[in-house]
Image 1 (cartoon, rainbow, N blue to C red):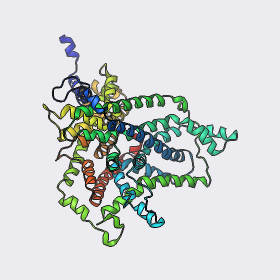
Image 2: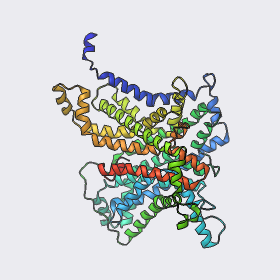
Image 3: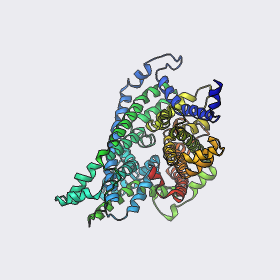
Image 4: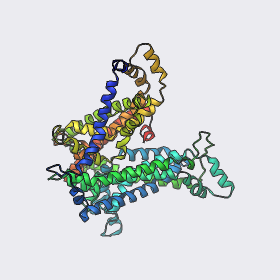
Length: 562
């Protein structure tokens, strides 16, 4: 026994601690969520009453159906928007490809709930600019488009989610050799026929993969359905879960109601992995045929107009009205010199009791969560890649598990696990940081695992031969070699955590509200000028970190990892 203990490195204790942290962050909240769904609130006795209550009313069933329909509609529209853009950028001589990439990045960065607020200013039925101009132009009393509708929610979600489809499809199209299209042309097929019959069918798995991701994004979003759906009396799963957290809190019913959402998500991710594993659709042998841009002639301007139109709807129009409103005394008066003011920003920076506190909360919660996620991901990736424990694959699975867990379900799991005594962490910074770190751990782990695989273990072994311990070798040899990958992972986790609403809305307290939560609270008050100014501050912070990433890692560092 003593001989075995001598062979155990002291650093193995660290690995054990890391495994415990991973289980604390991911496995226990999910297990607790499942257990609580079968517990009676006061006694903790086993019961099926939570499921009976959660699915025993027509209103709750309708919310689930609405979510599924919303996911299908949003994903379909996102595919319609993104596939032509991806084909144009990857395969054709369309001008303005840099502008298209900027559109995709802009839609990726703009938080969905902020985009929803922009579209309220644009297409609100009574005072939205689009409807005002439509009435002035046609004399019609009816609005051209009502954003407070199922169609409005679908549009906003699709305009924010189409980059997921674009990235998948473009990556797949980049692998298709021009020789296949040339062969079709020789046999008499025109450009559009070759595209429909050759290029697009070859990347159908990528299209389906993007469709599934947008579907899952749509059914798990809270901000857009809450901001646009509640005024329209359109209830979905996420807003219904939020109602279960109104007083009195029914966490056990919320846990039961969240289970189908979790099962749907896990099932569709499994389907996506099976579809994307079918590599026979595209040649990925590495031999790589020639890839030449297709000459479209005048049609290239039609494609450019399509891409520009998507950019206008997804980024330019909502951003324009948000900027206008942020500097306006009354946003409905439009741009006029006597309507310009800095009072909205002055109110937020110097007078608002919570605005600057929420900015500080957002920055340090996101930074702490990113740091925790990156450190944990690096060490877990090292354990798995170097096969230091026998159950490394299980660790990798747990580290990636939050990828298939909607943020709102993860938040309810953390509430169930850690809000009550003995830890009593509800509303504290610690709970929010832990939840953010767990929520975005897969991003950090994917970056770290890829970077560790690129570092040959011989360098660490050489250091150990010279007397270095394993942990010292990791710190002095491995970490500097993967520094860029770690920085990229840290920046992406920080950026997505700083705009996270679905998880934060369930966990914040009176003094720990983040900018996303405060923005949602402001939207309920209806002061769009101050709301737009606060959204502008959030975007400035986000763009500052995106700028750092572009400078250090390349302009498409977020999309490469998307």
